[in-house]
Image (tube, rainbow, N blue to C red; front, top):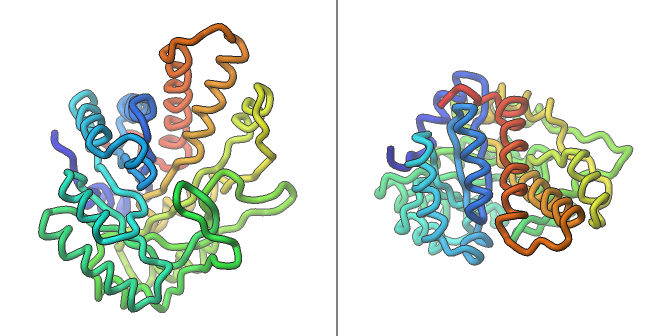
Length: 311
């Protein structure tokens, strides 16, 4: 089975009231942990590569490892560029074999966002690649994404029809209160998602796949493990999983998850070295890290996304 686009995945997810997990990948062990979890749970997958991951691991290596995952698992897997910020980056990813790209021109005016997105869509569709774009801006820090709280903005439902119609984009990331990174909300606060915005977007774009970025939920047990074994991670409250599950039952067909994977990796490695300080073989500590990624992904597939058994 070759790499696939997200088109059929999103159609089934919209009709079935669940979402596809879009997991960021940076190395072999993370890819293996995600894919092993999806294989055991028979779940479709989107494996996504950020600009930072491209610089770290080289997109050729990452693409070949994802292609190996397809051969090993026989799962429908989409390879996606996450937060491509230029036409050139999107074009390079398309030419390099990605089956999906995101053009994020959300920091521009609406009309400039439309112009840039339309240009990417034209090239992508000519090469049988699908495109995700973004309206609204999420706060937080992740890789090269750095948006302050004062610069963040909810998606304006009045803009979505014009944007989708003029660009021809295949899916749309919206801002309804999620945020990038691990440190989302202080203890004592009550995270809220703007389901009124999501409902209005769904009303204006019936049947159209919506995407949520910044949807890691920072499991408390991972924070505890990191702090216990030499970390210095402050308490943080992530997006409540029941809110993400509700969004997945609506128009949201893709939910991005990155920070949870990094936390799982870090917790397992720190615990391993605390218990085995003399180890120096990378296989000894990356093996537990891979297993930790696998377990957090299994949890997300079943309890948050609802896409287990949907491959």
